[in-house]
Length: 540
Image (cartoon, rainbow, N blue to C red):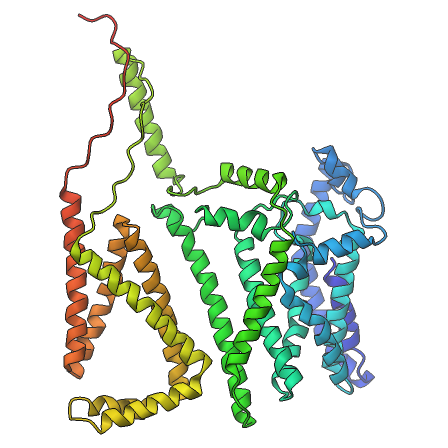
């Protein structure tokens, strides 16, 4: 309902054209409204009948009949609880370190100066003027609602959930501001663009992990450092689809955080590339290093303010303890509630109870430590693979950062290397010629993205191998095995000693890891500790 009122005003503004242009617009509007009314009529009628049957009137809502009397007070007075605005509700809904919209996503603050730029550019431009009024009215209506309604009614939600429809209407003026800043070459505009990029990255880094947690208790001081960071640090990561196929936490939940990091990285790289393109068109110095520094400062300031607002008192500790107790996939475990698995478990329990009843045995709980899953032994071959992964990961990440932050310097360096290789002997000259023919900014951007992804996955593989998880060796073997056909095709098309060496090394690693896992599974598993059981009565 809050979103519909500004849309109606937007439609009225669209009709502020000459009367001669009204007829085609009104015909399209009447047809759309007629179709929407026909489609919604059956559902509206069913809802009115439901309210009549449950509450005695088709226009009576169910808020006054809530089971918990504590919630009923939120909807008393005014229109369904919406009364006069309150400064406390406004400030907490927008700037609270727990769930304030602008505190968790400061990037949305750019919508306010963006509206100013839109208003300045809207003279004589009817669509732009309509966009200004639409975004402004959406902001005002949602601000009035959140200020006049009970702040406590947000519940255990991540952020002010009632203002979720406002977000896309704030992104429009924020994007307009970014476009305006990128088109200007003054020092203030470049600084503002760098700060805007930093606000975008820190919003992803802050709001992303918090949004993956279903419940944020309202007793916390802050959402990130008061709850999310302590839980993630102990391995209580969000459940993903991998948890339902047997991959335990934290490895199954780490995929979601890895994707968030990848989104933030790609956003930062794309922003740098956009700024570099603008500078090249205006023959201005690139300045990607300055953008990176400003972005890092903005992120550190945002996270530092959130850390300073975190109390870490008894309320935060109690909230963490409660979330640990009800976490769907605790560390070291996978999600187990597939219907087939549950039915099989119940079937096994039924057979065990029948056998126990027939023997009249009362099993006692197992005493002593539980048998943990054994780690895989470390051999020389595994040590070499771990060392290779540990050395390759920082090198690839460093190359990705270098190609992203200083592309002009990278092109100059690679051009000189290509010239040296072309002037060398016949073994290296083809490589130098290939580099000289394929060097461009587009190639560097693709190479930076590939190097960054390769570095992240290589680092993840190194960590998993160091932790000696048996399934991590399968993951590395499968990942390398998928690349072998492409490497073989490349060797067949254009054979070279370097390509052949890479192919043989990767094939040897895959064969070694597969053989190692097969041999490990053939080993007899250690016997679990035996528990004491009561004696069998009525012996023969």
